[in-house]
Length: 335
Ligand code: 13P
Ligand code: SF4
Image (cartoon, rainbow, N blue to C red; front, side, top):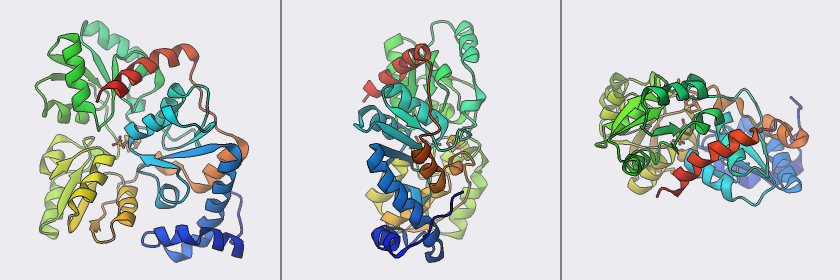
């Protein structure tokens, strides 16, 4: 890692940004982050680049260098409409692939090619072909947390924020009462619990959310009476059942903004609470810390290196991209 100096110019250029994150970034760490923040923000302009950052990025990325932040659905929508020539995906590989499929004329970079996902790793395109042979006529609803190969075999994609609507719409379009929903068994079960549509699942799970337990939630409630519990639908169903609200990362953020709970716990990846706490100083966040090792591969120095060297470029073979785009577009068209 290149070590950049914290000069008086850098301090002046980034002072406003530090004010924003002071609650969650210790003062002693800022001189390390600030030169990267400053260099990234200057280089982005030269390269006509945007940084699209997922809600699980650390606060110095999320609040200081991102041009757009959001959940998987919002990032996909933004990738489809940005005017920039270069997209730096501050997220994991499947998100960068989705950006490339939606904006094939743009250069899509990811700071670390190893930023994968346990869900994406749990299934291949060949697996989906076998599922379709086993259940002919049933639509395949594929979580965006999958490779382009898997999407290419699918009828429609979904994210955690639109899964129920997508399942209901595709069942209606196909005239069936059952769909195949891959690869997250917990998301599939949580959606099945909210709709009359039956769901055939796959044995995939998010390695971050599957670790939460219902007992943990009961312990939070016992330790902090009145606490509001928000859970991501990648959590096991018994965890979701103990929560006050379940929704995508963006839906959880909106819940805090709309309801302004006095004290809240977000049953999801570690960085979420830090990022949301910046915007809501009056809310007390109890912070469980389950890190996503893939998301955490994205760092400020990695983003700077990406912009300096225009690496690592994410590409998708044209035939796969053309087939994978159809289920993504179909999802984006569902309200
Ligand atoms: P959302 O931001 O779409 O809720 O997804 C969460 C997640 O785990 C992404 O990898
Ligand atoms: Fe995948 Fe879970 Fe990490 Fe999201 S949090 S990238 S679903 S492993």
